Length: 271
Image 1 (cartoon, helix red, strand yellow):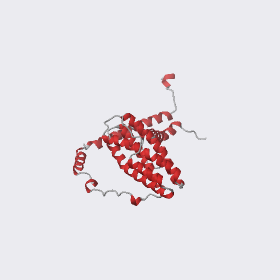
Image 2 (cartoon, rainbow, N blue to C red; image 1 turned 90 degrees about the horizontal axis):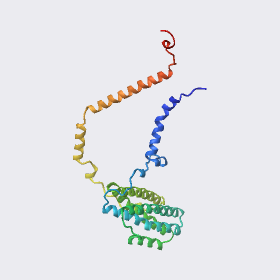
Image 3 (cartoon, rainbow, N blue to C red; image 1 turned 180 degrees about the vertical axis):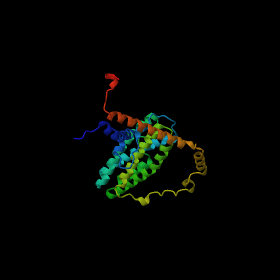
């Protein structure tokens, strides 16, 4: 039976072990994510209502609340009125998830001292009335079309708030809402009856925004030219020296471990 050197085994495994633990600590959701698709680590965001809150921030919190006020009853109707098992499941999932998002929104509003509405706005009430009057496949189409259009409008609004807000609680709510909306878009599109041709067309890209501003490019180029030329050389020398010291220390340690112990003759015997 071959003896296994514990030190040798550890030296081979410590690198992957530490990397795996670090990845899990940084983002516990990574292990559950779809391969190659990262999941935003909400746990890294603070939520202390710290930072200036703008009128756009308050409006965003209100709109997230309004979304739940009409999409929850719409999902309930989907479960009751539709004859399609897939539509029923989509309605159930979206209604349940909006219940969770509504709780997050109310908690955020309490911290931010934002007054929330308690009923849908006029447009949302008209959409709900339209669904109540529809039956069968007509209901299915109205339900999917209205919710898909609403999610398509809120999606870019969330991105604007997430990237611009100064308030950490609004920032976290925007990130959470973004994940809910992406999930709901996917659920609605899984129905197979979304009229993609009826969706609004994105504006053409502007030539002015397709390239970085000349001033920015000049600043970056000037900064690169001003970097000390010795930085790379010093870094390489430091790296080489560190590797050499590490190799020397490792050799000495291994040499000492392999060299059998021999008592000094002058300690026990005459010189």
